[in-house]
Length: 85
Image 1 (cartoon, one colour):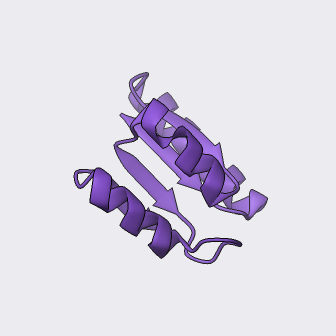
Image 2 (cartoon, rainbow, N blue to C red):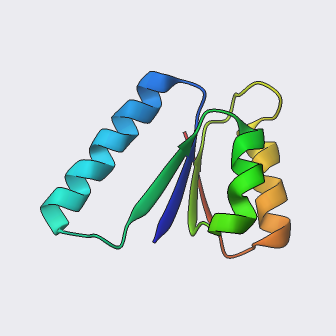
């Protein structure tokens, strides 16, 4: 499973990374791969290359909201699961 996290709050990203690392440790799940982005434009630039299964998005970010970002993903990749923070 490929997961993208996009949030401009470094503390929030660090917390999510810690939770994911704990999940991987407890479940010995090496299939989970995650990438973090602090700007929506960074995630958009990498989307085609990584084809994420799940996107965890902050709603309020500079330049583009998480809702606007999700709308872009859903048009091209309707099977992507979107989770808002």
